[in-house]
Length: 137
Image (cartoon, rainbow, N blue to C red; front, side, top):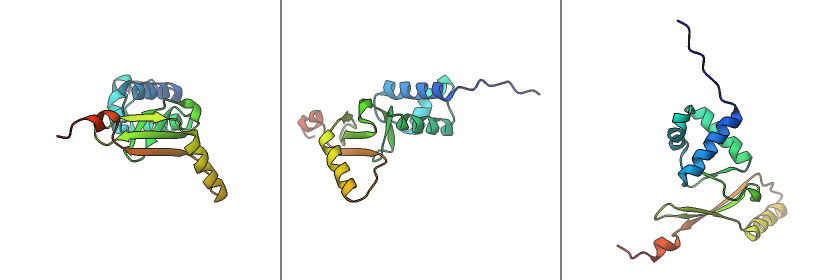
């Protein structure tokens, strides 16, 4: 019995599908949650999704949040892989922002200590303004 030929998507098409899904979800997601988001678009193999995520991270279009083991779409592509995130422990919201002074300070330390920085992702953990203002209960 002959197998039905499968149409292979280019890496660029896979990347586009993955980054659109990340943007559409609007919150940090694990790779397996992402697979569920894109399964209907013909992308379902974990290695395919992980390779696409790695390319997107290298291209500055996505980030991996280490403390959450999750991925988010980049909101500030001009920072070239040096991202800062505020993560709310209460509601799970994530806000990406630029902090050139913090990046410069850490790069200065690295330079003084002969450390070559490959990537820099800073994560601040705490409570967002909305959760901090909510009554305890």
